[in-house]
Length: 261
Image 1 (cartoon, helix red, strand yellow):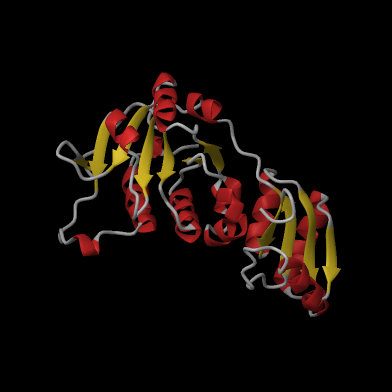
Image 2: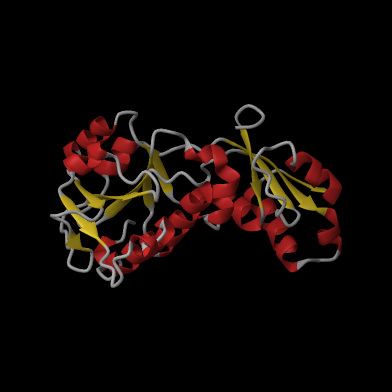
């Protein structure tokens, strides 16, 4: 995280999502003066939104915005004239998130997803299908907040995100003690097709990354293991994580009560 506990957010979508969610303190939003002078519709709407929400902002030259943004390591050079300097994200309480889950609802644990773009795409995909709560590994993925916010189209700022415990077995135990099942996405001797999977209990769906997959501790504690059946079983054509998330989101969304609210 650059500059102490501050981070950079780029683009109108990411900035508006962060302001709306209230999970970060927005120090200041910088808006391109030239775009304002040209009465750019989206910029004018953003300025109105910032005024209505009482968010500090400054209309500034593009060169100044670029200079401010370049001090942050995850500066993506694609801010479109809008950046925000914000605090670290406030994470949700894991135990509270688990205990608030209702029958049929599910929380997604993205385990072993190493690339922040893939991580953001996965959140964006599942959020579109109604998933509202996520668990992430103990390592703070949001240190790449700008990349994650951009690639998730702001979804990472709007959803609930809780950090897992440092020890995977303790996390698994907490999940079960909270009354939720553990459902792992993997091909195994006892796995069932996601198209045949049903659950009346709340559960945590664990989806692994393409390189590391799911922690063995979670696999050992799984109540159910589900997989996506492929017509072509050549491993070269297995789906990337974000596409796996799209399949699960679409299939599980067929049952309205499977949406995490």
